[in-house]
Length: 494
Image (cartoon, rainbow, N blue to C red; front, side, top):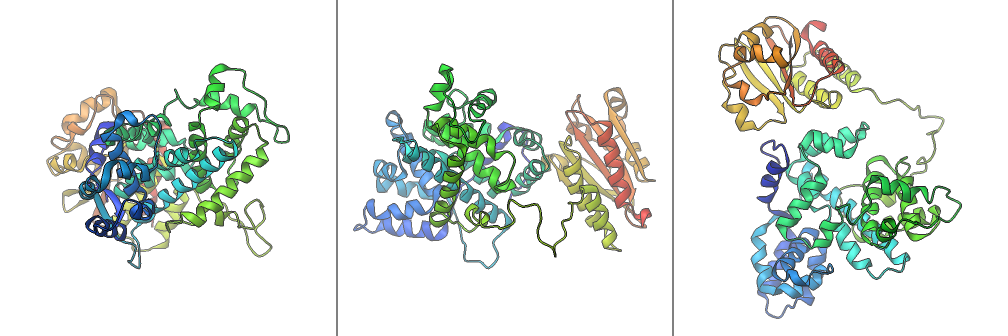
């Protein structure tokens, strides 16, 4: 689990560089035994290497670190194992953190980690199948490139599960993935992956799969998709020289397969965004869109048989849902529209008559993160017996929060603790009240900050104080939403 809240590329790099690669304990134990037995050869441990993707990834990186000049093409982890030898594989063992699947209930981070690995296998199998049908000679390389390009994402789910959950919620609410990542992490996951792969000595082909020098940018993808706009017709040819080069680079299969697998897992096979990538691949392969879809579905069933990691329901099983492409769910089932986050909060608060301050604050924070996306940093305090103590926070470094004297005399907090109130501060307004905030709290406020403060009673003797800060801008709608959340969790509304 994450023990602090990094923000920005450098902090996340520092955070993840120090983390060990999670490897299934049984595979790690078997590897140690095989290394000690002199009768075992590298050929004999291939199955064990193939069984754990991060084990294979570490060996591939080590081979690339030792012999970087031979990395003109990505090699399989088996070839990499032969390059590094048994002694160097043994030296890699301290880099691994064992986990076990024997427990009755897996933790949420472990389930998410295994699910992400399975999605990567589904994407890799899809990319490999497309490459085979194009009669490419790079199908094995493209499989490993596609699999390992998500390695940083695996680690984020394992070590920073709460943060990644927030990103997924924002994407499902309609926010672009890149924007959700920037708002939550302070950087894009692709950008973070490139820097981490450079640190890990990952083969250059994996890094190239993120660079627009080797894959199409947004405008070029639109052009390629347009060439296959009519599903019943074969796509046209790209006249642009740059597009022709990109079409002939197998890395485009890796990029598109990754997008399709993640989108299908997040939104289902009937996602309105999938046809765009199908059309891009149709243009690359000069095939009809229907054939591309058929190949993607075939690859998902292949992945389900070969690489089921147990973290989630496979994409192949989702294809068997009889209601997948229908709007009606049957005569006995009534379709309900999902509640808005504010409606969910209201329902949860009204459902429990004697809900405590801590529960109310927890629900309020979750709703803030869903409904006020501009919030970069947030703290919820409990005021009781003339003392202020932080209950929950998002986005800040925990050590920085602990260092602030929140109980120091503060005119602002004194007013907030007396009655329900709300205020939106920035520019000169914020500058004027900085000295009236708790001692040293101004160190977590930037000169460009917007600060929203609010408070409400949550029981007869307790108040919750809201602190929302952003280096961007809070809109009037954000301020209105905060006041609604404050009103809903208020003790006086019951």
